[in-house]
Length: 265
Image 1 (tube, rainbow, N blue to C red):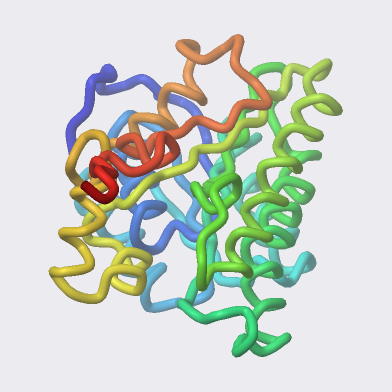
Image 2 (cartoon, one colour):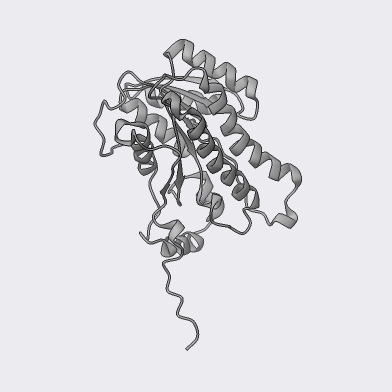
């Protein structure tokens, strides 16, 4: 878990990571802990939370875990209150809980569509709203995990496109409303990231994975550490004049396909 930032960049800071028990969000939590932060992890699965906290503590970091569902505001509010009681005012919030599956809109159940919107969009609002009164002012920084689907229509992803588009606009509105208090709000839009559940769903075999890699300007999947580096930039003094921004960390996903379209000869 290495990166271009100094080892103790977040010494003395409190970082709350929703969805932090697995995938990109777990790596983000681990990296903040390695950079000196006190980390609070919120997620649904107690076993995963225990494993995530242990991975940080065993590496010499400080972490606490809190169980709950981002769709339940009362549970989120209680967890953030308990985290702030234990670790102090919150300096950084990362909201990354997400759901996804592949399905055409005509075959998608209303419950399936609603579940993704509730986890991604409503969950992000719950996390940010609950954290608001416990944020360190000025200087607090909030980051949502978005996706290219927010701005790039993707077949079989109507639910994700709608939810992530909502997140992007929520980030911009909160940046406007909370900026005068010294609170910055941004989002990271990761492209295809290796060894994540999302890519296992979207590219379930090597042929699909190869096609995605070939379409990218950089020709490769990203790494979880690269998303953590993006979070570090946005939440450190390096990004102190950045707010309301959707940071594409996607290997060129939003540029379109890098495969030449030669057409007929």
